[in-house]
Length: 56
Image (tube, rainbow, N blue to C red; front, side, top):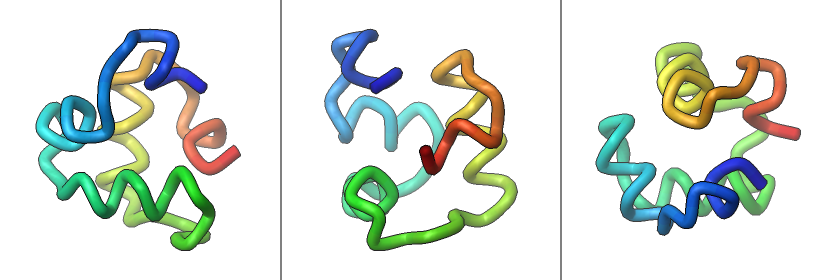
């Protein structure tokens, strides 16, 4: 997982993209099928991945 390769916590990533830690947890566990477009773009940018990889 891209976040873990960077050794970031869910809190670290959430702070970088401007969402809650619980939102990151929901995305990572599949409880959110498709995050908002702005969040997908922010996650992809911070993690250095393509937007389609965000929910994979």
